[in-house]
Length: 471
Image 1 (tube, rainbow, N blue to C red):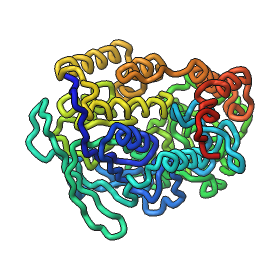
Image 2: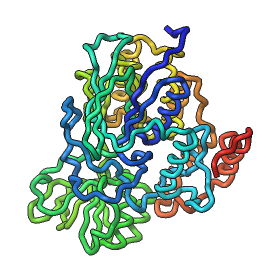
Image 3: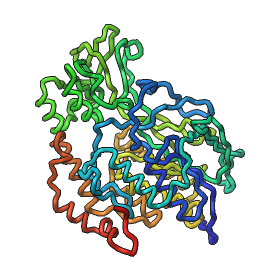
Image 4: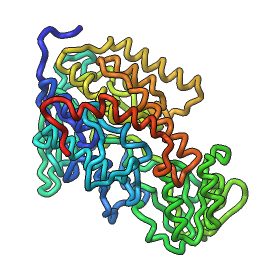
């Protein structure tokens, strides 16, 4: 039932990356009292590049699974960006709906710019909408839990949030009406299970702490995984390493673009999955071939983790399925008091985060209402069943890869559908990367689409009204 009188809630947003920033804006716009807790010194989240990975466990194993302990260990380094990383999508599709990711003089003007350009965009967004005053930097969230015993449907649920000021180690305890978790999902390494992995004596690391190719000069390196990072890192390593062996889960799913790169370099070789690791440095593959390697780099993705969150088991992570979550956002028993922004993967992220933020903000004010607990649980059950029928493994529960879903999600809150040019530019970049892996960011054949985008209201809104966007 929608309230006739809108409510003002105290809301804690955890994280000042893209999803946390847009959450803060929408919550404040809806009249809520907002505090954003950010563990780093600036906004950006994953896009705040951190070159210092000293002291971080190379495999990310010094962290625990989601736990109720306030003493749970945590990663020292949040960002997984490497120095040379460039965007894999054109900048035109990435901006929030009312703040386009435009080219600015004196900065990286490429359509697929380096990671720093996106950080600058987020800093511009933060400053333009005056969000910095809402953020407490260098503040790590240690614990989030329900203040009282939970009863499903309880309207008066409160949350205890314990945070630690990094420099002083002072612990602060606060109570909020609502918590929005916006901590991202590209920090906690997801590792394969390989026989001999724990006893292998040479260097092993996850791509989370890879920054550049210099430490691998003249080494024999095995890169595990043919994802975007696996491809990028392999292409970078091949310029300095003695040999690079790229280990693929499926030899039948290698793109034309990656095949071209492999055929071009004598020191880059494709291998199947690893069978086992032996203490003398031998890496044995499932086809019987083997190499003696100096280093193994696991480009095997990331897992969801919320080590600070105590929901008494109501929200759990099972093989990278965070649930139960209605529309990947709301735990039915705790909604809308607890919500998550940024869980879905394989989407055009920023507009989707924006639609999530608007829905959360309007639910908390009473402007909108969620379905009943029974309806939300049935929706989740039906979604899980549809994924099972389609043969999609559990760990890919939140991989959307569907424009239609994003549009239907937006309908919950009257959010505009993705523009056709935005969808087509996204698909064009994906197709181009499949066939021209080394050059797709700079060899573009989408001039007409680009012009359509730049002449759309998304970009021309900059020129309308008395105020202009910052140049």
